[in-house]
Amino acid sequence: MRVSHILCAMLFAACALFAGVNRASAADSSGLTVFLPGGDDISGWNVVSAAERDATDEKGLYDTYDGAVEGMQKLGICYAHQRMFRNSSGKIVTIDIYTLYTWQHAKAYYVAQKNAMKSMTNFRTWQITQEACAAQGAGTTTAYVWGKLYAACVTVQGGSGADLTTARAFVTTISNKIRTYKDR
Figure 1 (cartoon, rainbow, N blue to C red):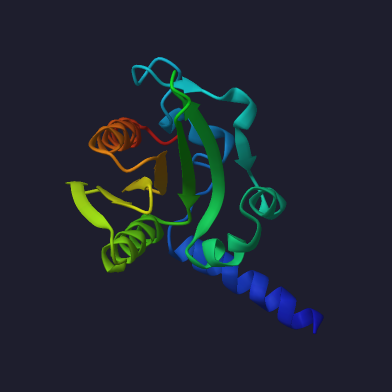
Figure 2 (cartoon, rainbow, N blue to C red):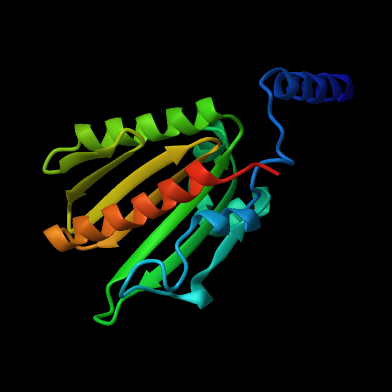
């Protein structure tokens, strides 16, 4: 039994090298904050600092996402960070941003989320850019964006045109930060 664990570990390491995974150069959970808007980036929205959550390992993923972790890992998610914003009327925006093992994982995650939104009845969907999409339904606005090794989900409480504009502002900011990021 022990030999099979060693073989699995060696096979995983070989696959990671073959796939070109260099997790040291990718932003880990704490490094993911470089892609997130700060308190002054989007007018009217302030960071809820007490709500920041990091997931730098499997325990952190379970602490943050509980039962969704196995599915997240199958999609290639290895690190995550969650940040919340609040405006003066008390509306909340939640951003979950992930580091995935490869850009192929990041794109596949985005495509899966986009397709899931399109298949939901009573949801309207929009393509924001080639790397970002949004949907509204059930009183929320949700947008997804991906680039390089990263993917993010922006959730806005509410389903109005203003909420869609807010989601677009957040995903555009995140997309621009990912696009201009230089790996270490």
